Image (cartoon, rainbow, N blue to C red; front, side, top):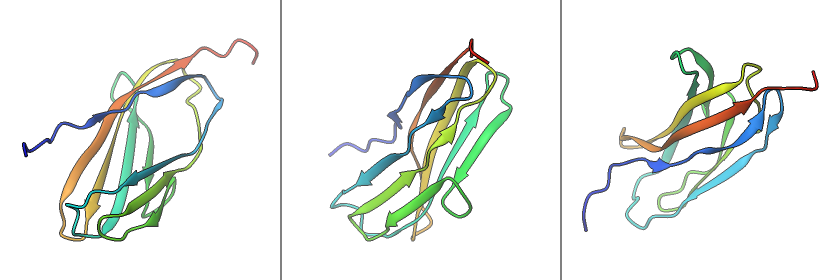
Length: 117
């Protein structure tokens, strides 16, 4: 089996500025995962590299539902989209009980101009 370290492409659905992006549940059920899940983080940045949001299971925005080895389960909570239209970049990383940090997914999020404000 080849080692695959490239993050899963995860482009969020296009949304209008200020609207609410719905919660999304993730399940990682790999028989190779012999460790428990201890943390999940997502950072979202605008085109200039300024951070719009950091979601973190240790603080707010992400809930770990199950951390059992071989059966990780977490929810990215709903999020209000930025009020500035544009293309945002983000990635999601997890940390396991052995201290391994892995970028699970990365992608973009297109925010459209809000016309009705």
